[in-house]
Image (cartoon, rainbow over the protein chains, first blue to last red):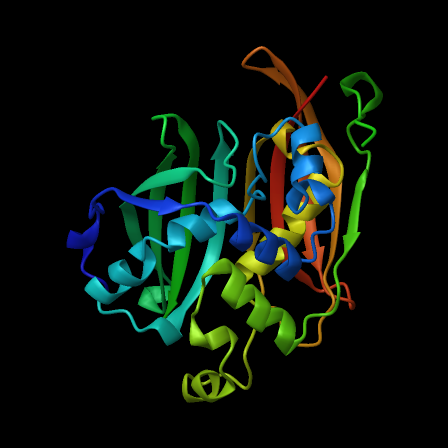
Length: 146
Length: 139
């Protein structure tokens, strides 16, 4: 069982770059063909100052901080036992290529079901851009299959 | 993009449908690289077998990305206020995911007209893989 002492574990702020090439690669990987995600002229016509990050790319940016892997390692959970249970985003402002996004991730809950056969790790993150604007809030639930 | 109007949208409407390409090992390799999620469970069959699986399987976030595409094919991303997905079953290599979405609620919040869309992802047999919802602002 994961020690509940990890509830409240909070990462130091970590800043990641939103890279244009990565955004184009991500669009290809998810089969996104809307030119707003790959063509800067189309993005500009849609009102963006640069290529926008698709809705779920915010999660990818947060993954760059390594908080997921650091947290499960600290909890003694093997990578091969985890599944992504759920993910949610609240969006406040666009994230676009060239932005620098700072994440802080907090373990907000750890609980179990089925007599400990399944454990759940709830992590909440904030994403703030280089201008100090809160651009998104994220929550992920990781399921540990014991 | 022709944008939907709040007045023209009704609870029960099903304005969203997206069929993604079948999931191949290439899909997973590209998604692993592009997403930055290098968990070997999704790209290395030797690792997956050692962990007790028969094969690699899809990243949950790949399925959520398809849900995201389905939403932004209906409204511009700038209209999306929140978006969530619960992953209910593992998606395997060879499966084809279809996302459908229906209008579940119309409401006003923060001075905006918004609708809540319920989303469902299923494979070619109709087996559910994930469910989600998105709240979008409409003019």
